[in-house]
Length: 75
View: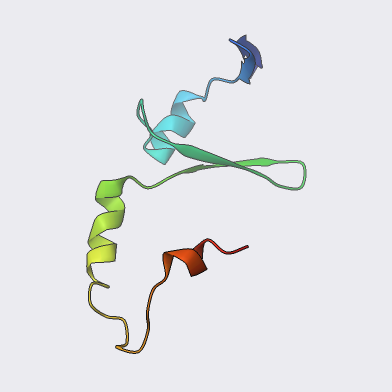
């Protein structure tokens, strides 16, 4: 594969076999993870894939647990 210029960024084209194996289509989001001399490509799940799993947890938190937006964003 060759690295090309796309606007002010660099780009590569993914081989068809990899695209099929990952089930990628236009508009999908992927993560690139740097390994030890390698790059791992992972497809991020779509909202349609994530929502059913989240719905299973609806109402499952213990009554004494409170979620806080401020606490979630503390550094």
